[in-house]
Image (cartoon, rainbow, N blue to C red; front, top):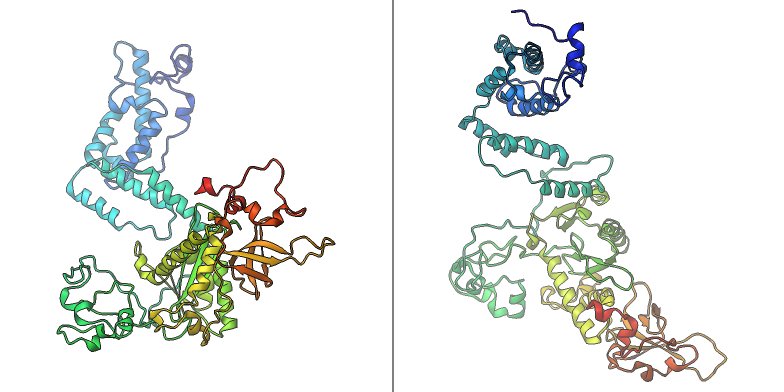
Length: 563
C-alpha cells in the first residue's frame, strides 16, 4: 500500500501547524527534522561500543520527543488515516536516523525491518550481551588503564566510560565526582610548576649505592621477642648480637658493641645497611664520607599562628656527614626552590663543595618546576621517598623533632608570645649546631663542618632582659640611657645580638647590650613600674589604653586569645 506523504502541499499545513497539532505531541514534525540528518559522534560497530552508542542515540532522540517510537510508547494510530500517515513518517524518520549512525555491515542486517522499535530491540539483543568474557575484558581494560601523559579530565573520562559499562552488568561503585575534582585541583597545582620544555631523566646505569641508601620496607615484618619490635627476629636482634661499632649505643656503652659480644647468631655488619638487624629502615651503618655528599631537606608548616614577620613555614636542610643544620623561615612553601638555589651557591662559594645527592619527600615545591630543572642542570641526584614512608627521610624528620623540642623549651622558659616561634626555631638551630652529639663521637656539627671548636662566649639565655645602649643624643642628661629589650637570637651576618624593643615593638641588632639572664620580662607583672623609662617623656603608655599586667601581653595583645 502506497504511503501518503504528509508533507505534500495539501497536508503540510495540517501537520506543521501548532494550532492543529501541539508541539509536545510525539507525532509533531518540525520541518527542520526532515531537512537535517541526526548524526552522533559514535557509529555503532559492535559489542565494544554499543552502550556508548545507545546512550548517545537516546539523548539525541529524546531531545526531539521521539523516544516513544523506540520503547513502544507511541503506538500506531488506528481509524485515523491522517495520524496513521504521520506516524509512518515519524517511524521512517527514526529508521533513517538509526541507519545513519551504524556501520554498513550492521545496516544491512536491519535494512528490511519495518519499525524503529524492532530495529532497536534487535540491536539490543545482538550487542547488549552481559557475559563473563565481556566483564573480564572491561575489568582488564580498567586495570591496565594508566594516566600517562593525559590530564585528569581525559583520564577520568576514560575511567567513567569503563565504570558505566560495568554498571550495566553488575553492581559497581558510582563515579565519584568529588575524587575527580580533588585530583583536578591537584593537577592545577602541578601545572604551576611545569616549564615549557619537558625534561625526563630515568637512568640507573651509573647508580652507585652509598652507605646511606634506603632499604625497602617489608610489609610482612616479623616480630622480635627480645626488644618487642617488628622487622627482625630474636636471633638477629642487636640487644642479643651487639650493636655496630658506630651506632650511638656502642659509642656511649662500648660493652654493648658487636666486638664485645660473644653471643652466637648472625653478626651485624658495618658495611652498607644493617642486614638482618633490628634497625628501622632509615637506620644505616655509615654516614656520608664527605660534607654535602648528601643533604636532607624538608618543609615544616604551615603553623596556625604567623610569626611576628608573617612567616608560616620553615625549610630545614641537614648535611648527612656533619649533621649541620640550616633553617630558613618562609612566608609560603613555594619559596623553597629559590632558597635551595641560594643554599647551593652558598656552599659552593664558602666550602668549595657541591651537593651530590638531595633527599626529600614528594612535595611539589621540591620535585617540580624550577627546582627540578635546577637539580638536573647541576647534576644533583634527587632521591625521594615512597608514598607514606617518612622514615626514608628520617634524618630530617628527627631533626624537626629536635628543633621543635628545643624551641618549645626556650619559649616556655621565657614565656614569650607565640608569634615569636620563628625566633625560637632559629635560635634552636644555632644551639643544636654547637652541641656535641654521640652520633659524631661527641663532636659538634660546627666542628665537623669547620674543623674547629665553636666559641661559646656569645651564648646568652634566650628571652632574658637585655638593656641596649641608646645612641640617641638628647639634651636631657637625666633620661635613661638604656632601652629595655628582649633577647631573641643571633644574627647571621653581624657580630651582635638580635633584640626586640618592648616599647617600640620592633627588632634590631646591637652589640652594646647588657644582659640580665635571670630576668624574663614576659614573666614580670606590673612591668610599667619595673622599667622606669616607661614613665619618661619618650616612652609612655597612651591614655585610654587598657591595663596591661605583663610585658608579653603588651608585646602581643592577642597572645591569650590565640593560645
